[in-house]
Image (tube, rainbow, N blue to C red; front, top):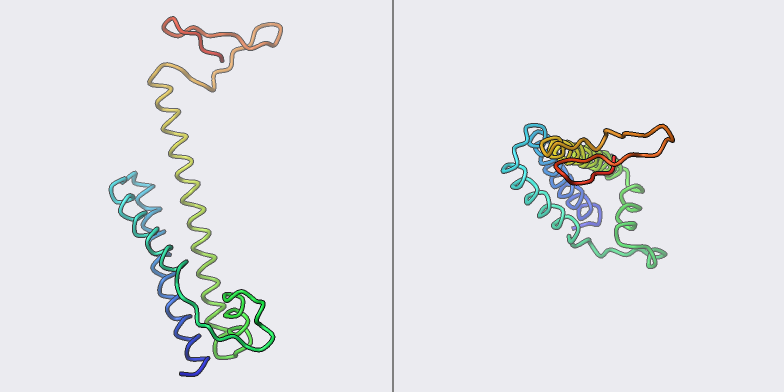
Length: 153
């Protein structure tokens, strides 16, 4: 098998894995929006397993002269970008990786919003609004009593 075929096989494998990750991230976002935590738990397990597989995947050990000091992934990138048959595949893969990164960031922000919303709701149920800042005439914050307990506002 030629070097080009080895790298093409690797690109195809990565593309499949990142497309699967992309699909999982889409489902994760929907589960977050619907607050379907059972489905979310399953998706997170799938996502973590897939990421582990991607991160610990063996790379082809085809070292070219002058590349001995480059990390393996840099060698793969350099080989793909210098090969006209592989460049488009590499570019497509990097676009998919970037989309996955973006979707993962969006989902992280959704989790932050859900967490914040849940905390706020819990505080409101308890009868304390942390956004209710009371100040006296001197501009100092005052102590609010709630069911006999002091709460700083």
